[in-house]
Length: 321
Image (cartoon, rainbow, N blue to C red):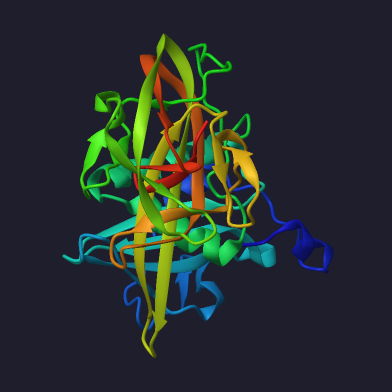
C-alpha cells in the first residue's frame, strides 16, 4: 500500500478513495486467483497482485485451511493506489471480499471497512485474526487503529482508578492442569506461576482472592498471536495460535524485552509470554489488536499468591499486582 514516503520518491500522491468507489470495489472479482495477477476492471481500475505475493494458506487451531489473496486496487488515471483488495476463501470454496483503504481514506470509509470485516468475522470465525496477522506482516503498521488510540468509550463512562484487576470470567491455569474462572478461585487453591527468565511453571498457593466493588470499569482487551510459516512453491502456509486477555488498563505485564508495562500501554507488535498448547511450553506471542472500552457494571478480581511474580490467565503470563 502506498505511504507518504512513496509519494515523496516521485510517485503520484495517493488520493482518498470515495465511499462510492469503496462500495463498488467489493463487487470486483478475479476469475483465477492462481493465474490472474493483473486484472482490468472496466476502463477505470486495475487489480494488481500485491508484490506478486503467493497466496497465504492459513490453518487455525480448528485445523481448517483458509486462503487469503491480496491485490492492489489501482485507479488507472495517474495509477493511484486506492487500497488493498482482500479475497478470503474458506475450506468449502466460499469467497469473501473486503477492501482495506489507503491511509488517506476519510474516517467514514475506515469505519465502513471495520464494520465489513467484523461482519465477515461473524460468519467466518477468526477472520479478523487471520487478516490482521497477514496485513500487519505485509504492511508493518497498526491496521486496527481507531480514534483515541484504540479507546472506544462511547457514551459510557469507564472507570479508571487504582484497582489492578481482571474480570471474573478470565480463566486461571491451575496446578493440576485444569482451568478455573478467576471469580471461583479460593484461598488455598494451587495455581501456576511462571519464571519469566527460565519459562518454567511452578505451583503456588493462593493466599486470598481480592474482589473489588462492582463498577463500570475500563477494560483493555489484547489479541495476541503466534504464527509459524512454511513456504512452498505454490503458497505461504501459516499456522496461527491466538489468545485473548482482558484486564483493567493498569495491570502490569512483562514484554519479551523484559520491560514492565501496563496492559493499557502495550503497543501493536509487542511480544508477551503465553502457553503454547502444542508444545506445552511458554513462548512469545505478538500483540496484533488492542481495544479499550467500558466493560459494563461488574466486579473485578485479583489473586494474591504465596510465591512467584506471575500468574497465567487465559494462557497469558501476567505479572502479579
